[in-house]
Image (cartoon, rainbow, N blue to C red):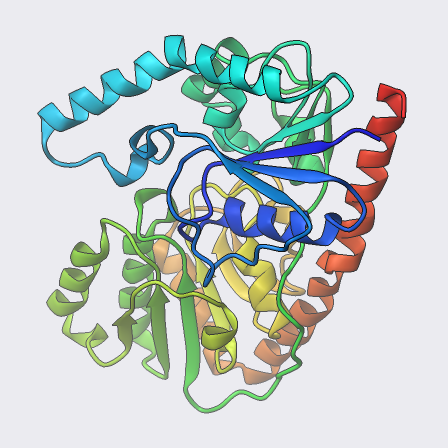
Length: 377
């Protein structure tokens, strides 16, 4: 059997793609020979990522300002222009260097899995390439992403997507889908106190809409103040979020803006409802992490895969339009109706079982064994 090369941006900072990929590799490494290839050369954060001795890790030297450019764009227009030119130069020309390096390091018997747009761009021709795309069709079908996937990258043998609906609604083909696994132990907790504890767990960046979440809570506080909400994350919108809370007096004793977190368990153990305001999610991993702790999510419809990951009215409440008052009203109803909230908590716990590590591991093994069979092993 050939070897699996798994290409990922980095193992130095928390990110949904990185956390999930680390988990998948760890539960497959006993059954396959795997080499992890990190695109950047930053130091591995062993507090966030569990690295087993069963696989090798190599690192490329791609500029982190390219592959993690969202961390480096600023208010300085000249720095942004310079960064844009650097990205364009890599996308059109410099990627060829890495394609050649990868081709020299691999064989036609190997499977190469790429987990990011810049990884896809350095996938070499004449190899068994697979693109593990961690986005849904709302993101995939954007014009710029079509260019990256179709024009700047070679066509892979198959796209691995996160939900069946994304397979159907994206322009990509051929596709298969494998759900993301949960990585925390389940905990049944159905009791609810007088004060309902909400939580928001996401990057403080535009695509996660944390300011909209604050607007929702401001609307909720006008009609009900029997709640608290803790925000956990990191990003350029943090100062603006703090300013919003300071400028809305009714939120000052109800909302806390916290920094980044290392593990969801340390946050979720005493929470009752998660709120999600993301415009687009590939899968919504925090929804399932919360469900493991019997916590339902009240969320806006983030596009393809939303109705596949959650079941509206059974383990979550899905708001179809991005309307702050509508979400505030939904939260108000749950705060006032503890029996209904407990029903959702039970539904969330049951839903989380669909994404257990054992189930998802089996799906990956079935997929990989079939691919190696087609290759000739």
